[in-house]
Amino acid sequence: MDPITAFSLAGTILQFIDSGTRFAGLAWKLYSSETEDTSDHGDLLKITKDLNDILPHLQSTKSGIQTEKNLCQLALDCSKTTARLLAILQKVTIAKNARKRDALKAAFRSICKQNEIEYLQSQLSSFRNQLNLHLLLSLREYASRSVEQQKAALQKLGIIHKQTLSVGGISASILDYIVSRKGTLNNSSDKITSLQQDLLQTIYETDEIKTDKEEPGSSSIHLSQTDRERAESFFIASLQYDNMVDRQSRIATAHETTFRWVLQDNLPQDHQPQTARWSDFREWLESDDQLYWITGKAGSGKSTLMKFLCSPKQPGDALDDLKSGIAQELSRCHPYLEKWAGALGLVVASFYFWNSGMGIQMSGVGLLRTLLCQVLAQRPDIIPVISPKEWESLCFFDRQIVKWASSDLHQLLLRAIESLKNDVKIIFFIDGLDEFYGSHEDLISMVKDLIRDNSHVKVCVASRPWNIFQTAFKQKANLRLEDLTFDDIRNFVQSKFHADREFKNLRR
Image (cartoon, rainbow, N blue to C red; front, side, top):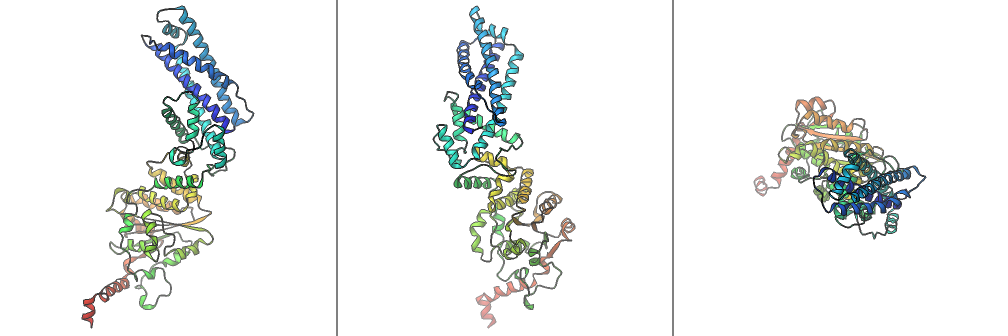
């Protein structure tokens, strides 16, 4: 149905539901109370007038299209209930005129039985649920149009388009229009809020329903560029948390000559790391091998190495990105990862567990929120695909996510990985697995989930050589850091001595 017609009809149906609900409330009050309120008669007359005004509009709806038929059928069902209520009201009026004392209460008790009132309440609830679903479909149809067509639709409804996504969502003007058709401005804000809550509940409680124009897995909501960017930033901000990059920023930057060996081929003999069995990291970056384990005893420099790998050659180049938690686009690893990615794009995300920080910094929730934040910051276009209900709530009603559950975050990340499989290659750097507060078996399972059946994903993890990590990763590409940093330590010590004035004098 044309959304303009649908919104008008929805407003009429909502007006009936409101009047019917008031009738049911009054009927129950008269049926169950011992005394009669003098205002009840006036309320009854008002309900009668409203129902008489609504009935012709409900009876005149027709359509030949199936999706329109459903809403029209709802209107006709409402019209039948309206006619029945008016018949009851007419009988009550006749009975009232025939009696003088407690006439209205006595009439209701004789004409409208308890089970009839309960049935009416159930029917009105069903009508409201059906209306919410049809109204949601109409909002989706409206939102699937171009921004210019949306503005034209609002003008056709007599609405001056002043709303933006930041002040109530793109549906704010429409909800205001629908509620205003009820003929009163009293408590209009509360009624809009109530209708919005009903629609939000419909979004989350019903399976995803597509309009005829939608493709599976697509987002049909059309926003202006400004509103889309604002919605994306709102969504990503819901994943961020205080001190999200605190651990990474506190890790010392490696000395200028430290770790050069990890990414270079054919180093001079005096710059080769100590002889040890280790898997060539640069080769791993360029290959289809999916998991690399960096291990080493406490204080061996694992976190420093992970920061070195994720940082650009010039640390100052990524200052703003580090503050926002977005993965670096030009890290030291990028030239080699691009060989692996080929013609596809590249997404890099990192996380550093820290058991000396806040609880979230050593938790699975912190890991998932950080990785998702970085992935979506680089590919915000997949947000409507991986989280359609949250996206719809945000765009329609400016409803921002307050709290994410761990299970939802896990599924969200897996859906993000799946949605990007034809477009990009993804690598995750996860440091400090041993600093995770929780079941390390669950953490290892979560890491393996990222690469299971996802050939476009790599994961580089770092931890102490605990037995549980040895069992999980020892057969994968790996290195033990303390076996490879003797020359780095010697070069660092020498550079410190050579930079010291007193040492230079002593040396001479």
